[in-house]
Structures are given as structure tokens and as C-alpha cells.
Image (cartoon, rainbow, N blue to C red; front, side, top):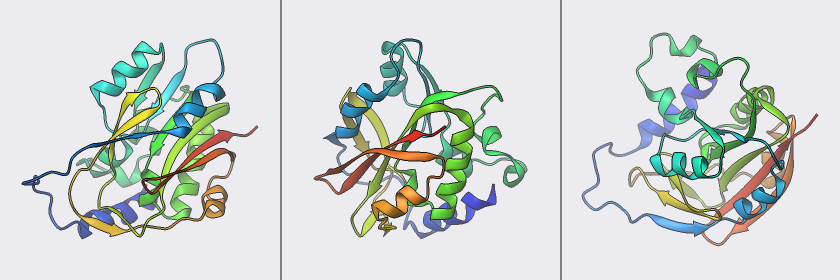
Length: 211
């Protein structure tokens, strides 16, 4: 899994401090147009299988439980930084603790694309294509500004169409400044279903697995 380690580790090293903030920035709640559209796109009937690539959060577990969905929390970013024996030789399925037969209807990639190269996004997309059912959706947020936090945000559902953004620190790094065409090209096996440009400097994407 070295294709992910170098990029994210470099971003981590550039952060000025891992110590708790004396005055942590306030959490912000923003509406999400992609979430509003997502509920119309998900397949009706049956129990949804959701893969969350963010950290385990009680608010999100509760949200999906009330929606009658089964949530698997992978915590991709956190797992890559955990002290693991032989982690560079592990498959992504092992890092995310996925059973071979698991298949998903929705993947919450959050803002992880901001911390990956285009090749790394393509590798992640290839894995997601294999663990997603045809037509499954991937929800991602891509920054359009010049800088991003040194570590990904922590996202909590504040409602069916809004998200609570929590920063992990005050460090900043350069944003990748992805163009929409670049994001689309970096997701082989997925088609861009919807995009939404939000006022707070985020472009939301809904991808659908093809085939």
C-alpha cells in the first residue's frame, strides 16, 4: 500500500504541530446539495450497505442506524497512520477490515481526494469498483481554494442534507486544485453523476459505478 503512504505522510510531516490547539477553530455546519441529491439516487428498497472512509463517529453510526442502513467504518486516513506490522504489504481490503464478499451501495470518501495524487485516486477507485455494486455511489468533496487543512476534516451528519466540518489542527498545506475533468479522469469505472459548487470553497461530487 505504499502508493498512499508517501503522499499522505508528506502532508502529515508538513503540519506545524500535532499538539492540541489552545484555541481550536469552531466547527462549521454547511448544507450539502450532493446529499440532497443522493437520497434521490440511492436504490429504493432493501437495506443499504454504506462504506465510510472517515473515522468512527457515534453521530454517523446513529444517523445510518436510524436510516436502516448497515455502516462499515474503514477510517482510511487513520488506519494508514496506525502502527501496524507490515502495513505496506497489506491490501486495502485488509487495512479497511473488509470481508471478501462485502459489497456496498454507497461510499463516503469525504475530502480524502484532496490528500491524494491522481494516480492514487485511480488506485483507490479501482479498489472501490471491486467492492461496490453496479450503480453504487461515491460521495466526495474537493477543495477549490489554494490551501487545505494539513489533515482531512472530520465530518458528522448534522441532518440529512447538512454536514458538521471539524478541523483536526491549524496547519495548512497547498491544495491540489483539481479541475473537474481531472477528477473525472482519475475515477476509472465510475461516472460523474452530479457536481455541486458550494459557497465555502468546496465542490461536491457524486460518482456512480458503471457496469
